[in-house]
Length: 204
Image (cartoon, rainbow, N blue to C red):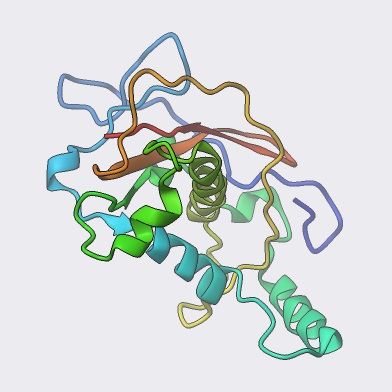
């Protein structure tokens, strides 16, 4: 990320101390950096993927409202004043700060049009459609991870432009049915000066 001074910055400040872990700690120690103790799904208030997409397009990203590209570029340029000038201005972030879950309500949604968009002609689930949702969800997680302390509470748009670059691997461990809800969850596992890594998603 480029700062106001043109220097490359990480999108968070590293933690300065190692937390003491107990049997009730919220972060688990494991051989892989991508493992955290996630919240109990039964007690979580789910958002749908449609809500995630709507929040990104209307709020966080805030696409152009007119056909005037110059006006849109001026609006984006105005947001750059909220970018940190140095790494020290960024708060420390943990993997669990970016954890989130969303569902595709194929089983509970009464509107059959949603199921039709995800169902193949053979009665399965469109993997390409799921990959599109995972792509958008990864962007959502990165925006949730990037916390700017200088941005006012009434400003919902972010000065960042985030795109997905690649997928390391995909495992399908079981059948995905078009008449059951699909849960997507994940979190940021690693950050660099120009990229983030995410862990997820899982289906339930």
